[in-house]
Figure 1 (cartoon, one colour):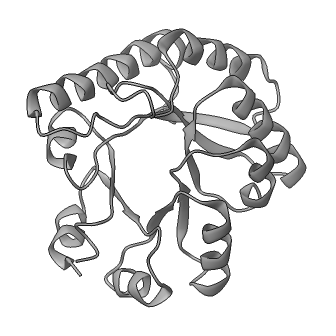
Figure 2 (cartoon, one colour; figure 1 turned 180 degrees about the vertical axis):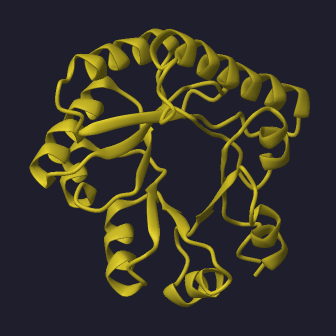
Length: 214
């Protein structure tokens, strides 16, 4: 277990989300006992099982692709959904948040990588989703920022360029739609292989798994 990474983010302006997918409750508790509270899962079924088994003050993040029919299971408790990759999914989350009687924080996921297999919106789709968000009188969902994954490559210049693009998107959306909203503040980018570059390019939230659970 890499305790140094947890310590390095303690008191930092960047939030460390420990990616705990496929990890046991015992492994998660080691990090929890070091003070780590933000954990990310990419499958609803696994997330639900761990939520029941682990301490109640853990802040659970949904970081994987989320199917519409699974939203209802996590709506009552999820801390942050990183992977809103369509207007349709946003609308589903909105409805389920209303039913749960709470406001759910979400990030809009952009597609910035070369791989076509990665999910995410383009800029126009993000604007369409934000327009729908601004039209909703009841704030059952709160858009607090954006997320993306860079291309899986050893080419650091490519990774830096993609993260720079996401930061540019954030700045443009902030200026146009959220200028007076302090809640729109998160740029979730950077994983085990590229989080240092992501932080240099303006990330406020990194998702690290394999480096932590060594």
